[in-house]
Image (cartoon, rainbow, N blue to C red):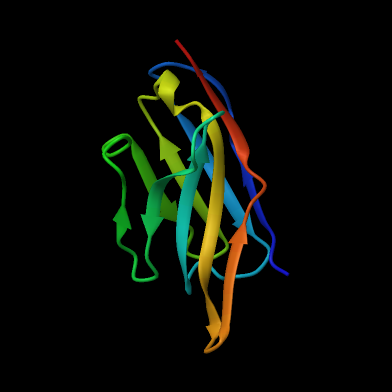
Length: 120
């Protein structure tokens, strides 16, 4: 079983920055789609960054231009740089890796989440 561990969350003032990390216990980020989601209290989980195995990254309009996804070359760690944070960015942020070890051997792993709180 692969573990994903997020870190880097915390409390920051509006306009500030945070960098979230997601470390995997096995090298899988090179062969997987990697996503960052967030979930605020009482709201549905929202996708904030989607990286395909080919390396392209998509962002929703709500974070485009402020959030940046990146990967380490080792394939073990991914990041979410969050700049110009707003109070509405407050949520628990989750890392997700989805792919397949082989045909008929898919995987879909989630981290435990890290809290981000942005004060006004």
